[in-house]
Length: 153
Image (cartoon, rainbow, N blue to C red; front, side, top):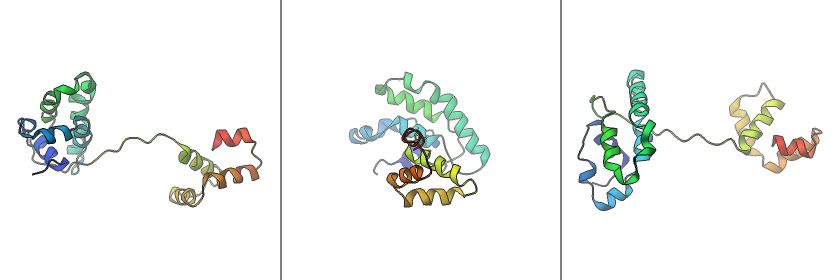
């Protein structure tokens, strides 16, 4: 069986304390405690179960995760198995990292100011249909100075 996130999360939910010990050397290289925490903190199902996993992960893992050196993956794994309430295998979901506000967010704000009644989905589509050059030309046509354009877009 190849190592995959589904197998890792099933082992976490089953509190399989020997999971890391049973991995091959190649599988151990692929194992990431950071990804395990990201996946482990979010489950589908009832809001009570979702809340439990999120709070348990934050309380037992996130607070001191970076204080434990990389060479102690076993310790991180053992701590991770403690978050499972022992209610069977859950369907874990990925929580993406927060995207940094970039030019797309700035353009969206610019468009939102121009068209306050426009739906977000329409703003997103408008952004995809136009490039940066088009937005800068539009801002110039609206009488914005180069300094304002640089700041806004």
